[in-house]
Amino acid sequence: MSFVVRGKYANIWGMERIFIKNLTEKIGEEVKIAGWVDVRRDHGKLIFIDLRDMSGRVQMVALPNHKEAHSAASKLRSEWVVEITGKVNKRPEKMVNKNEELGGVEVEIMEVKILNEADTPVFEINDDGREVNEETRLTNRYLDLRRGRMQKNLRMRHEVIRFFRNYLSDKNFAEIETPLLTKSTPEGARDFVVPSRLYNGKFYALPQSPQQYKQLLMSAGMERYFQIAKCLRDEDTRGDRQPEFTQLDLEMSFAEQKDIMGIIEEMLITAIKNLYPQKKIQQIPFPVFTHKEAMEKYNSDKPDLREDKNSPDLLAFCWVVNFPFFEKTEKGGWTFTHNPFSSPKPEHLEMLMKKENTGEILTTQYDIALNGFEAGGGSIRNHKSEALEKVFEIMGFEKEKIWQDFGHMLKAFSSGTPPHGGIALGLDRLMMILQNEPNIREVIAFPKTGDARDPMMDSPSDISKEQLLELGIQIKKPNK
Image 1 (cartoon, rainbow, N blue to C red):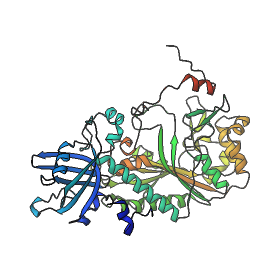
Image 2 (cartoon, rainbow, N blue to C red; image 1 turned 60 degrees about the horizontal axis):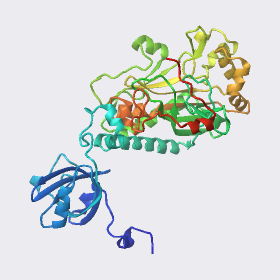
Image 3 (cartoon, one colour; image 1 turned 90 degrees about the horizontal axis):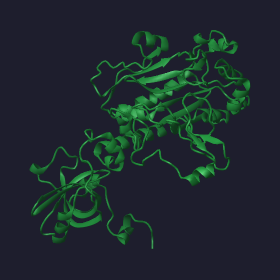
């Protein structure tokens, strides 16, 4: 027996299910569709049911002359999962629902198959859910994601990521995955750490970003890399920040600042024109400000340049460049403003190497802002080990500590690493703006709460004494 289920072999398996969005192509035909009961309206002899699947929603009607189907339809309730066999009819002109994409057709129900019943949902599914308590929504996220607004957010996220993937692939970038279990190094935020069972007392760290790995890929001669990367940072809770987030990460060898900015700008413009034609980009090419200019003029390094801030479809991008490399810590020392792997502006390299006028050293950092949010940031990197060492020396690291934490990078840079630079775009924040949502949790499938909990999975959670024993870990609760 053949396993081909299309074409002349389809009758071996019976009628093939079609998506609701394709019903307009099947007028007058018998079809099989499946999905969730959205709304049921019982008018006695006529029972109307709105059925939805991932592609759309359609009105169906159960007529008394199909006795078994009519009886089964009378039992259906919201969110039951069903398979329907029926005939696609064109609605009379006066019955067309112009507010629905499939408002011109109706399915006459001939057979009902109940695939799964459902408890009464804790909230309405067929509205936008904005009035529902967020804790309740996140606890029941599998229900919350059924609503049309959330489905659209996740599908548009997919479309944007697919566009970026295709665009960069056409520019000779290779998508390369980097490890999630890595080494804890000082990169700004706190690391999430993972205890090792095989090496008791030692720990992996989850990556705050793929920064070191992508630079090592440049050392490896890959030249053009990108990744849809998960980043994890153990930061203090903030309402619109997640402990794990997603970024479009890329790196290029033999590239200058203008090359990377140019690729990103073209990619964003083309993506928006193709996927969001209703939106207007205020200024092309994107305006460029130095950090000094942005702070003096707008008192912000991510200025909101929209001429009409009440227009949800207006997008005002800009670049901010020439950031200070270092800033003072609370203890009076120096730390980096973005990341320690950036290169200083060429004319400031001598100050870095001599460790002079530290506060005046500018870096090759470039940030892209959108409607008052930081949409991404990157820089040309240090690609010589002696220059990277100087950065850590300015930050007060002893040579032994530098080599302990970053010896792998220093060795790689001494092996013939080309000049390189890159950027990371925050996908969650970008999608939030493009979808006109108030926060990033609305465009993430399974986000944490503002205080970093997952109420659906009830995490973080305790682990068993047996697991702790295997890991060689003892929990000591702080004194109250």
